[in-house]
Image (cartoon, rainbow over all chains, first blue to last red; front, side, top):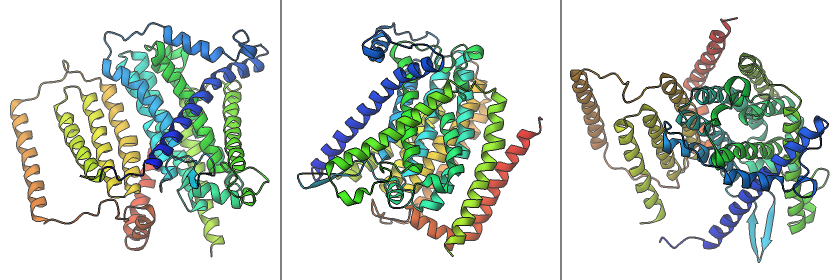
Length: 347
Length: 165
């Protein structure tokens, strides 16, 4: 009975997982390079240009540097949790990619392969659940460091994430009224056949986008690592690759949230103005679709960077005011209007 | 043993072991983290019953929100094993007696409930479609009233937060 498993399916999924993880890591790696280049352009500098052409080997050099740094675990820290923190941060960052439809279908030797690791019935909610677990990596790491600044930063991060999850959840509910399904693959197919959800839900998208910025701990919401008041934030005591994991998880989160926003609001792997169904399951159209999704996601990552180098950090009370007194009521109103309109047209 | 059974026994053992660790850990933060493990194990059981919606809601609400608040409070209080106040001996005895009574009731309730065949992996009441239909047809009034209650709690939180201005 134990061997009655579709081994081909396991192999297929395993390959897909490895590819997705590697691609996400690669994009996160080059996001660090892009971030410096974007910062350099905005501040009229050159940015990294020594390692390789256009400084393209800079991320490799950075990674190598982090690996060779001395690994310090503070004496007074809780050792197990101190190690667990960055692991959790990395894991929750990668976990969301499991339910994202990366592309259409491939046909290899008569076998149709979905470019999605798990097409679960609860797609959006899975993403939301993993995002809500993402705070543990920061909280556990911040507490286990046994440093007051780290603890304060961790608590800040936690309260920020909880506050913005509310508005995000309500924005998702308004989107669900329109899609009528939680399955991400169905949501993408609907958008391929009709119009993108951004047309129906511009306000919902704006709320979702701001909340995604806050959930990724990006400027202007990077209160958890405010240098001038908290030294270095929740990863103050971390060194070597553990610090690298925290920094890297942020970039993976950015990429994944870009992918999710493209999937929910911008048609996922839909190529604009082209009817993919006319080409059948040709392998090149599937690949182009994957390319379209990545392009959209990378545009979002660049917008994140643009915002980071344009807008200064909020004060903490401003952050809470924005979350509870502005975004939450707007999201509620958006939900009510969407519900009323959907009800009106379905009559 | 097929895969479902192996998973069932694994998750059950994990749930019970973690639940024991919640009580036995000296450090309150560890207790909270073990409690999160319990929620994960129980959510795993929902998956075995094909109740995907209940699985994810259990994770979002309990592991993702309520336990974060627990962790928040306990981290702020900074309870340590050496600073933990020692409770009265009689209080401990009373706690054991009360817990034992609760367990007795549970065991008795389980014993009298009779055996029922559980639909493993094929029941579909926990899928969001069926659950939604049940909630909005049979239980629509209590469901709506409780949702108004939640909304008022949320508005109340905002009002309390506004008081400072």
